[in-house]
Image (tube, rainbow, N blue to C red; front, side, top):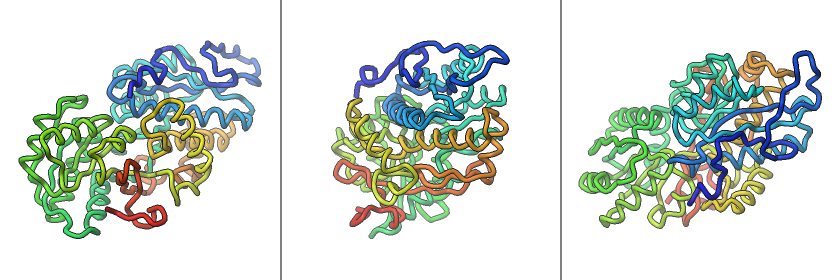
Length: 405
């Protein structure tokens, strides 16, 4: 997908409010009434660079939320505008741009970026300014000790082990469960740590690790890596692939006439991965897919329908709401709940409200007790079946008539 032609790559602010136009909005002078003045929410997304295929998904989900909340009258009687900047998939850019959002753009609230490295960079800025920081996609809660940060994804406090436990539980339910595993991962911070945790889980379960390999995030040439995997020939490939890395690795393995018996990919770009002709049967993690029982969650049915329409218009290769889209929308639902719960724009008061309350979201109820405000783990496993993502584990989350293949 040519993301540069599908999504706005400008580094100017994208203000999505009543007018939806690109413009600058002046804040009222001290003592002046805020009535009629928009609430400005600042954030970045990777609209270009190696994470752009996923950043575009998050952008569409945010736009849908903002249009919806403004139709309902906004927040505290004020319209919402999204000041969105392109961090180009670079954590250093995210750090600089969040400084700009707070000091120059004078935004009222922050929304986190996509991608662990950028989230960590932006969170450091939020912490210096004591700002509430809601984020959609940090893969390792231990990297987020900041007390005013709140995650949309229900990873739980220990995904380092829980993620691989879920994967191995799923495969243990099939005939001839894997006995050997290869861990091949990007050096992306969360992927690297989750792979190390995964190896510990595999060892405790008696699986033999036949390959442990790390590569630089942003790698495009997977020929040598594919050859190493083929030589190891594991029963299960555990791939810490991020974004387009999954489909690039699939293509590289196919070129040497090899596909793993079973294969798992950590955080792949959902559309290109599902559409890859070599992807049938591979698995990944999920917290939401566009089928029952998920569509019964708060606002989910409407969100799924609107996202499908917008994604088709944008030319996304997989115009279906899955967990990347849902996690972004959930983050905005959390922000809305915090503002309404506190009754004012006050970062500490909003954080205190989130800490003490449950929020109904498209991903189900979210609560924020425990370490890192993470709440309870609710991780599931999905599989590519006939070009679509389908939840397969635990069985109660499968669509009617679904099965794990």
